[in-house]
Length: 351
Image (cartoon, rainbow, N blue to C red; front, side):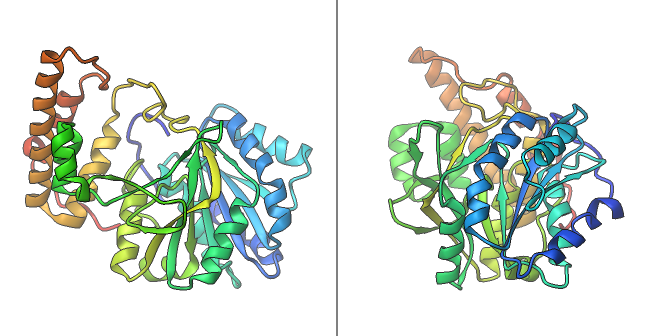
């Protein structure tokens, strides 16, 4: 996605009805895979290529690539690949006129599928910067079939060399924000129960939330809590969605046997390995929305204060201990400028 918050007009009728015939033609539908592309056509095409055998092993699977108004020829390249490779029976392109962010783009494909006369029971959100390993989709679907009380499940993510990152995440809290800012080993041990990243076992296990890079969602979850909140442009939307699902009684699981290679940050560069790119404003806006929406102003202020205080102490310790500076530029300044401590309280709209 782009590095600036953009206006998010309502999705047009043309945007949301393109899939009606495709979904209706699948009998019976099983799984809709949604891939949101923004200026990563080569990676998206490789992702589609990794899905060929997956689709064959799961009859009733359909793939929609949503292009978020890339404006760089992405849509044309992806459409040509679908036609030239003979993927048209199971894959299609939905080209949007607006770049409204992650939730907006995914919802554009999810909405018409959910409104179809015979919607699929499962939906998979898949990043374009992923390569799906053999049987990854079938393992997720089988897991959901065997555990009807589970609402969401995420794949085990790994690098291109196959080194798996066995981890999921906890919901952000004041204490996790303090730990993230302070980065002091002894404190991290004391706050381990609240740390954002939680190591996961080699077997499926319940988690608070898992990344949207490869996330399967049961249809009933959308029916009970709605689509993802489009007021998030990018980041925190899947965290918020998992939280709303948990509050509605749905559990979220990590399923490492479903293996998906993921190259983070290819659209934005923010989370790319080795990146020191300045954090964009929409990241801070998303973080603030998450805390305000789910915990209120006072809690958000405490979370901001906890992170900022911890980070200031970390920066001082870094200088004293002569540690390398690996933080994004202007991080503290940008954080404070976008904090409720300085911006004040604005009640977020419901999403």
